Image 1: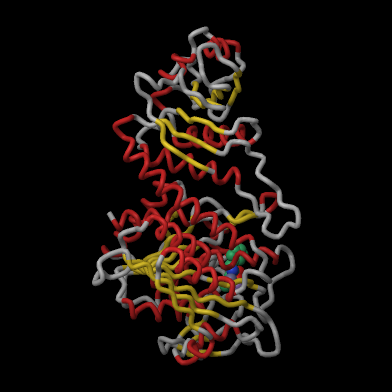
Image 2: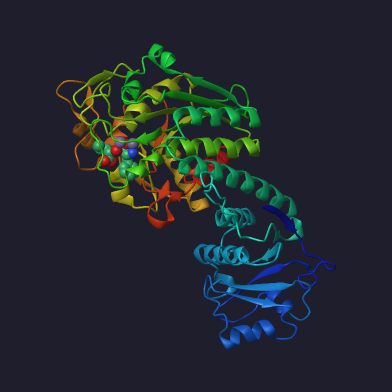
Length: 499
Ligand code: BES
Ligand code: MN
Ligand code: ZN
């Protein structure tokens, strides 16, 4: 899909626009936007509203052909809600999704989008929303299908109308949004691939490809190197699997050489059977998505690489399978983590924290400006926040409040939202073990919080935040598939940091 920016002037007007489909907004109050007024020379747009053929409600749409006075072959009216002055984010997104869906079924090969902006939003927001919606509408997961399911979308070229004075801003926003969409597509593809294909080695190869394409540094540590580093907690998770574990380090040094990097750590369990604490069979296939943290970190690296973001960013990804076998870790086993702290593994299904804690110790060497780990960590997070918000956890002091707000704001900017949860001493006590420094589970109450408390013990040397994306990384049911979240949140967080 090819996007561009179009500006109107005295010669190139909305009526003179030659395109397969021109998309304009209409409202429930039936008043016409400037563009709709121009196209209404014979009263056809007003008549469509008056007759009730289109209500103007957010997401309603009506296709008109060969409109008098318009050079466009088709005009697609889309509803944006009550009136032009009060377009909400939600109404705008509904309208764009309706347009994307409609254009999918059209014979047109190109389209021009000329919609008013929502209240309080800018051109960058608007362009990003369009680019992401159109990419989502044509996304197919057919990598493993013998017959590819081609996007029926005839529309290959989409132009956004922007005021002439903002053309440069619009072009930059378009390039950044395209990089973001490409990053999200990579995250979705990795997530949707089956666990027999998307193995730790496959993720490592993907990181190498990103490094080669976007000139990043890459290092893949293998089992021997992990043993030398004393990552016994990470290694305990991989014991039952025949797939070799990998530890991926990917470095984008877009900032000044001496600037402290922002570090992203992603949970990369390519299949979580639970291990000896085996999961129930129903929906176990969805545990192929347990590398969603790793996939979103790789997608984010791809996005900032394509953007040539002026910031130092290091990705660290521990990746392995969690499988039962005669060599698998037993409930009751005690391991010594890279940090020296000992862990009693009471449940082998609480494995994410076991691989992350060693990664969090490893990244100390980068003297990070901040560390954000991303993980499909707990079912409890899905229970508490559902599928709308990722869970955000940090300590509660000024530096961490600032980091938390940066992440929350990046989420609000992109609609990829997170909700802050507590980390407090009282929860920490649930991790007490009679035999080791801590247990790897804290009982059924507050499961996402005790998991975060566990990780917190390995992050004392830097400013740190944890995102639990168990509810947001993929969808179940008939729409089963990776969402690409939280790539928009993470990428925007890094863009804001780059300034
Ligand atoms: N990967 C799962 C978390 C998960 C489960 C995410 C279901 C999304 C949907 C994680 O490794 C896990 O199994 N967590 C356990 C922890 C428990 C044993 C303390 C859980 O959430 O049940
Ligand atoms: Mn598990
Ligand atoms: Zn898991």
